[in-house]
Image 1 (cartoon, rainbow, N blue to C red):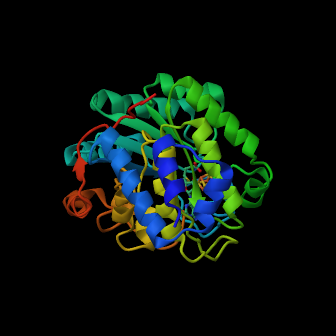
Image 2: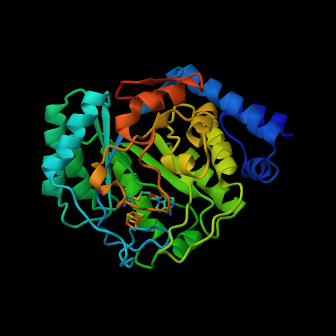
Length: 348
Ligand code: SAH
Ligand code: SF4
């Protein structure tokens, strides 16, 4: 058991790379329990026992990119493609608002039909209709000028996972036109422009080693994002990567605690992917220090078409219509699901 290292992490919010490596490689149930306890207490100190909701609107399954791990990659000819209109997106936000959601995440493939003009128009329409709401975009890599325009249109937050902080590993997960340098340029732009910015990575992605995870954690600590999205890699049948490593759910939960302790004020989702591979996965993520969930607000007719990975959950408590059920599940963790924008609280 690594009590001393965990106490150091909880007290100083940092560790050396060697200590992080040890904590990951030699993890045990008792380490996980102590980390979870410290991480939840750290979250409570800053945000209270409050879990924030983000209504996820998957507005386009069309993508020009070919990330090897993703079911929406352009070379997957079996993927069903759709895009929502502005009016359809606005119906989603109206419905979400009535359900108590105060943050909308517009996520999609890198779809060239969504020009700056169109996205800005959609964002400003949402902000005008729901002035007490935050809008988050998750639409991949764009130019700095484009990010600036989206920010000026009222976008509050932007999610762009770095996927892996190791260049060589990045190269094995992406086609050669996608590079870690470009991804980092985007993330730096987003943060400088003033978005609440989220990075993150998949746990158990193909070829991932402990050293890669240590690099990811080091990058997260140094970049100081306001949000961190980490979730399990889940294979999609039409991609070259078909295997999932054992213990991914446990490792994901363990890393959620470490991220909470590295960045006490971070907004940290317990992802739907975690709920997909482990029953009670989201609840366990909350008990380990996460404080965000992202119910699905996409129109029911498209939910089964936005398949980043196989067996994606979208009908039970992941569905925004079933918030009452989600609320009960979150209550089992001792936390409360709240109606709130859930902005980042800066503690530095
Ligand atoms: N196109 C945008 C947003 C959609 S993809 C983008 O790439 O940023 C959003 C996230 O889904 C990606 O960052 C990736 O980390 C995750 N993802 C993709 N394929 C996945 C898979 N097979 N398993 C788990 N997560 C996956
Ligand atoms: Fe497109 Fe995002 Fe999937 Fe990459 S991860 S193929 S950018 S949807």
